[in-house]
Figure 1 (cartoon, helix red, strand yellow):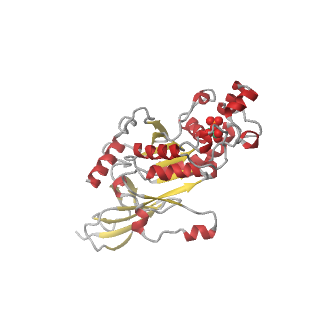
Figure 2 (cartoon, rainbow, N blue to C red):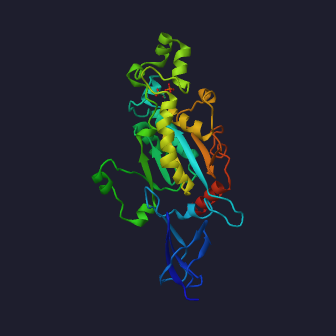
Figure 3 (cartoon, protein in one colour):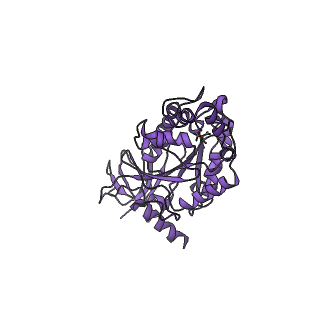
Length: 341
Ligand SMILES: O=C(O)[C@@H](CO)OP(=O)(O)O
């Protein structure tokens, strides 16, 4: 049967495929590789190969990266037989120990790097997520979160290259373009956003020792500043104020990628992540007080049908003991094993 190449452009998905569908139809229905596509107007062309597979090139908002073949098969697929919807992985990691964590100083938005231990924590975090798909990485504008993301990715078995995207100016955006589709396929965009920065403790507390501050203002008062939802530290940000930027950014710039089938890692800070977890797990302002995040410990969520299910936080020493893998992740890991052996 003569194969024809159909180019359909539908919204965010451009499909180039060599269909064996009846030509001449004004509309076609593709059910393949996890996408149900009602094709609108068809433009026919000729296809050099009768065996070319369906290539889905996702023109998402921030990057027109070609989908990673091993993560585009059954890992976030709408399987028409089981009618399961897209499931994507969200990894949250608080940065590894910083030099001011080590000195027990209020840090907030002061841009301090990791300690040697913090570097080790970031590498250890990478081992724990080395079999979980990552298509995009978001970090804050602070070096301790960016270092953590990059160090963790050195352990990932897929060996893609995380590349910090620069769009702080027209030139920066133009000058960091990648002109090879193949190279782009082997890269992971890293987006930095100040909205994911740590809660701002401002000059009143930033740089002060936490223990000395508790002795000066009282343990309960300092705990209230550090962990309550709506009580700000003196002239600083409350967790509520921090969530108004961090959760807003997550919903506007990160969640749509999860919805579209991309697996995402977010490397940020104790409080900006507490505010995001409060949103993901629908915690009350009372419950969030007891939410604590250790440095460099990855948390895994599965996003499905608008909901986030926590799939584990590190309890076991080994990666296997850490996450309750679901089918999507198990298949990805299996294909990684096959690809690497
Ligand atoms: O100092 C800070 O910025 C934060 C995180 O390190 O400390 P706290 O635990 O008080 O929120």
